[in-house]
Image 1 (tube, each protein chain N blue to C red):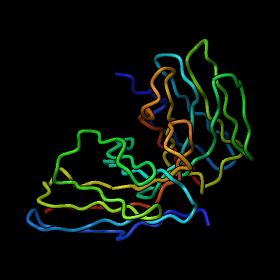
Image 2 (image 1 turned 30 degrees about the vertical axis):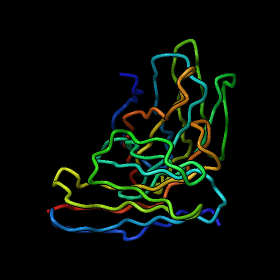
Image 3 (image 1 turned 60 degrees about the vertical axis):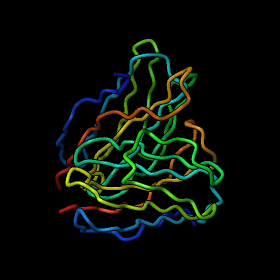
Image 4 (image 1 turned 60 degrees about the horizontal axis):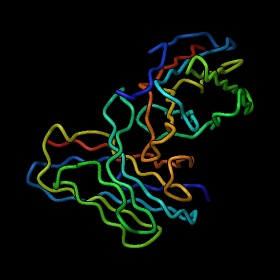
Length: 114
Length: 112
């Protein structure tokens, strides 16, 4: 099983809503990532978890709150988002959290903030 | 900016033709990876080439690395409509192992 599964695939939310994005992998990887991607742009790193601990936070606004309940799961809690936060949110994993590892990506959650 | 540059930004070819896209970077790298992304989907890893390697193959894909020119090329031979996607390079710079630096991507359209 070489899949990273993300739910939901699509999400529309208002600026006052609270929602969560979920990501799951069963490859035994110990590093998990959240990326944000705008249309026709490369992905931008948001957070890195290594062995279930947050190791990198790329100065992401506090309205995005990551959580890693266990080595297979990664959540991104969303609250009071802005329209400019509309984007494709991608989860990825790798065996360990070094930049020399190849990344396995999920299909993403297309988020629209109204 | 350390961001990689890719050219062309967009490429349109006919099925059966070869497609070549290039990635240039600023300083010495540890390795360089190529990813494919179908529209609105996640990225798929294609090939990783290390700084001491010059060429790697995977099926119809051929990646070259020229460290003297600070550039890499991805060649897709005998293209198919299913190769239509965006292609991104991503590199790790020597001495900065904190995160991947991504190129801006090449959008490839393969027409049947």
